Amino acid sequence: MERSQPDKADLLRPVQGVEQACEHHGQACALQIGTQRWTYAELLAWTQRVAALLTQEPSGQAQAPCADSAAAPRVGVLASRSLTAYGGSLAVLAAGCVLVALNPSHPPERLTRTLHKAGIDTLLVGDEALPALQALLPLAPGLRRVVAPLSLLEPLTAQRAAGEPSLSVRDARHMASPAAWLPPPPPTDEALAYIVFTSGSTGEPKGVAINHGNLSRYMRNFRALAPAWPDDRVASTFELSFDVALHDMLNTWWSGATLVIMPERAMLAPARFILDQKITVWFSVASFAMILHKQGLLRPGLFSQLRLSLLCGEALPMATAAAWAAAAPNSELFNVWGPTETTMELSFYRWDRQQSLEHCRRGVVPIGIPFADHQHLLLDDNGHDVVGAGEGELFVCGPQVGPGYWQDPQRTAAAFVTLPGREGTWYKTGDRIERDVLGVYHFVSRVDFMVKIRGHRIELGEIEHALRRASGSDWVAVLPVPAADGLTQALAAFVALERDDGTLALQLREKLKALLPKAWLPDEIRVLRQLPLNANRKVDRAALAAQWRQSPVSTLNTPSGGPLRESAR
Image 1 (cartoon, rainbow, N blue to C red):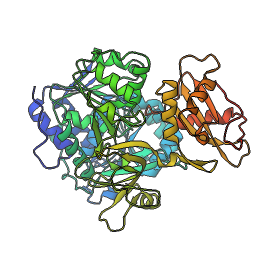
Image 2 (image 1 turned 120 degrees about the vertical axis):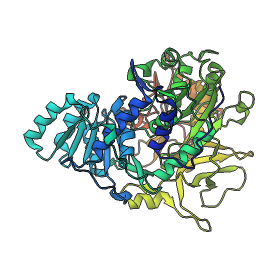
Image 3 (image 1 turned 90 degrees about the vertical axis):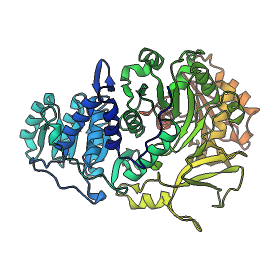
Image 4 (image 1 turned 135 degrees about the vertical axis):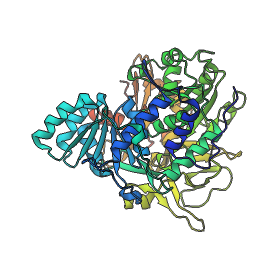
């Protein structure tokens, strides 16, 4: 089948793309969750009913459209891997509201901080989120309205009577006819589409705001590169609170394809899910591929039905990429990079089975070059342009760069900057990047992974690369930790290996001596069966740091920078 062409319209809004697809694929399957399926016509009708509810005041009166994007209602979607999660997100955007995805598995205190920070007074809730909602309500006095399935109404009504008389509860299963739906005017480019709340350094959620202009430009850019086809079965692997979940929805539903939701239990056996569900488009964090590679499951030809594979979120080891490409011989493979602040993803590197191994640096696949409608440059440690090949912090400017952090002008001013002699607003990515002689970018590390220890500026990414080589494991992490004197820093290295006879840490140290300067050698090496992963399936460095604090080694720095003790745990 020939690849479908990107949309002819210049820039579409989310619901416009789905409506266009429904005109041509109304009876095709749009969404599959387990054994349940919804056609495009059914999905759009459900979305319009929920959107009609969201455009009414809690009293039932219609809301006037809001022209001020800063004042547009923020609606929380408290749901996971359900019709409410996916159709509900589309309904929020269709209603002209700002989408704030909430993960029901997050602690109630964190959800409460997010509700307060975003100014959310309306929640759209799925059946699966009842425990989270019951825990949340006593902590959220500002919540005015809950739109939920009938099964949730009785406990909610009881809680309202117990102390929440201002809370309006609407039944999401008894909604107005789609014919009664009067859509608001299409949002302007400046109108906010969604806010993604990520962890802040102070523990307070940080809200990354993205407007409709950013989102429309991203969709046009991506669909010019690798759109879904009408007969595709697209896996949805991300939780709704991960912004790329919206990518999967829109790329699928603008194309007439089927979005197949990956259940939580399938996370432990993704290969079986891909095969059983006949998935043709796969987009996930790189750790899925790394786990399959580590387990020896990426057999050549295993995923012959895949035609498009995208891996993101972490540095992609070249050995894992080569194994995935062999397992999916009919698939294009992209390594994907992009900060949340630049609308999902910004740079794509297409894996070439003949040449890409030569393009890799430090054992990691390149991240490619940002989309052509963006400017990008590297600045060295002194703030000077890096001309030609070299390393520096990456700055980007263009239509996918968001307006900043929600109600946080200080943090916005620090990350969204102007540069002398250059026009526009530039996002300071915080990523240390290498540009090779071909102009292709390679991720090195976070700028804040650059530490100064024993008088040396040390790049943690370089140590991790050496540790991968020495151990043969893709699962490694190096962290700065307090030294025994309490005044200086030391380095703790973690590596995941299946077997350890108690001598592996010492063996790895000897191998690292041949790969690293003496001052760069870790003060401690811990061998674990597996490294902890966070909710986004990335290595959880905070958990590793907490583990180290619970049982720190008595590390002292000698004048030569060598450790006095190793550990293998």
